[in-house]
Image (cartoon, rainbow, N blue to C red; front, side, top):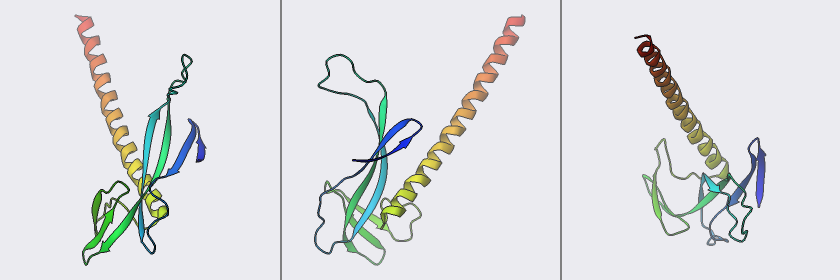
Length: 137
């Protein structure tokens, strides 16, 4: 298993899907992240706490190209149609583009989480001011 080290520990990187692909098939990719709880079913007592991150590259075999886009088949038989001119696509033609797409999705995720945090801090500050005003009475 391949992995990278981060400030929070070791991150597993894995490719999913059947190998080898059908002869001459085009393959598109989607990168995803998943966090799993640390659990050892064979350990009776001393269980490690926390969780670990796993990054995945999921292959999609091209069923056919159409004038408007591409029809893909996933590893579990799920099918997706990728519109050729779409800004957001479920899968992309190369692994590097798939990883870049994951990075872009995570940047949006971080920005949304930061906005929620700022809003929650504002609400907390307002509630603390309200408590101070009530305490003066």
